[in-house]
Image 1 (cartoon, one colour):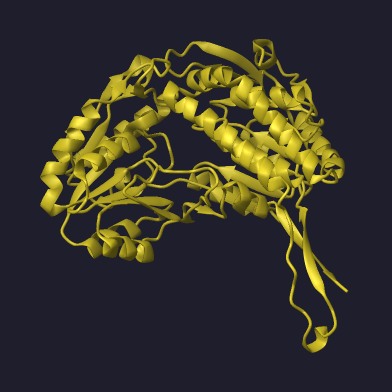
Image 2 (cartoon, helix red, strand yellow):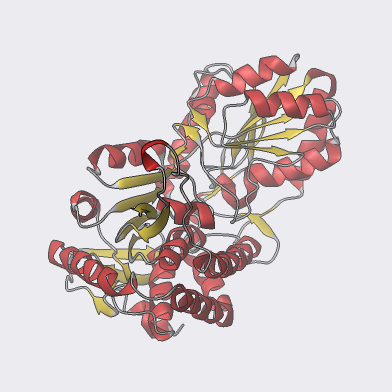
Length: 479
């Protein structure tokens, strides 16, 4: 990845850098020191139409190539990313404010996604449909899966490579071109990926990265030539987009206010260490960050002391420095939002155990915060915080905490620290979430697992082969 490829800073459409505007522009900044990284021209309606038309055209040819060819393209992209991983790590740190060790993990996970998609590309098949009975006597039938068509993918700032890859790699594996709209906070990583794809030979129009504003994105959302929307972001935006998507297939990976339970049989040292990292890593800007902590009354006081110790060990500061865990929040508006939610909770009776204030406004740092004596009507409990804040409450009965967690309108993932088989079984049967992590935090994710939520947390599933299934439609043959 050459800097000149990124710093052209235009949308990438049909293997060309496209962007005519010199006035409608986006300034991408380093999230720690606010220095400008690049100036990107927002795509105008004509450029959006250019992207749509070229995705449709690319589908005609790319959907017809062999599974082996699609696999080979994915492996070439993987090799290119492996060779240029340090440059992608630096981009993710600078434009996303992500701690460098976490950015390294993001790139490594993206390599895994590409490898998995390459492996799955040659496993796409159908099924034999039983039909030799009744009116079907003497007949045979089977399904063959076909790619659904060009896909509109919208990705968030917090994993600018990994969450884009969760959409791009499965699509390329099944034969679907992609138009990616990256977050305006972090478009450079996506543009660098597009540049890489061109260099390794991915055909023109198969991957387009369109940096645009909401009005232009709406043109893509409503265009019937694009057959699917894959969105990762907030619940409010996701469900609104679904209502406007018309006949498109829709997959939504949305937010949550993830809960974790610590019962009296848990290893409290392990739980405290994992929860400290799970709540405050990357300043809590992950949809499955720990936000609600419920601890058995018998170990509550002991656990809080252990958690305080572990949080005190977390390094705060410049995300480019080795060992930093809590870096900057993405934008001043979110610092103000988190602070106002904390102040609201305090006004309603919540107690601050630690943190609760801006640490360094110049560098967008907010202190890791823990509240107790909270109630369900507080925003910091009911909504998705997406910041370095969690609440902790004492519970007497296991079924009581299960009911409390389920009162949320979200249901993405939950964690349970326990050494009781009965607790694990009860939680799995009764928690209204997409996944339950035993003796781990809700933030656990392996990129091949089925990932998604229930209630306001999502619609459909990601994870390589599960995302591929969403992008295919079966066609039945009877003879």
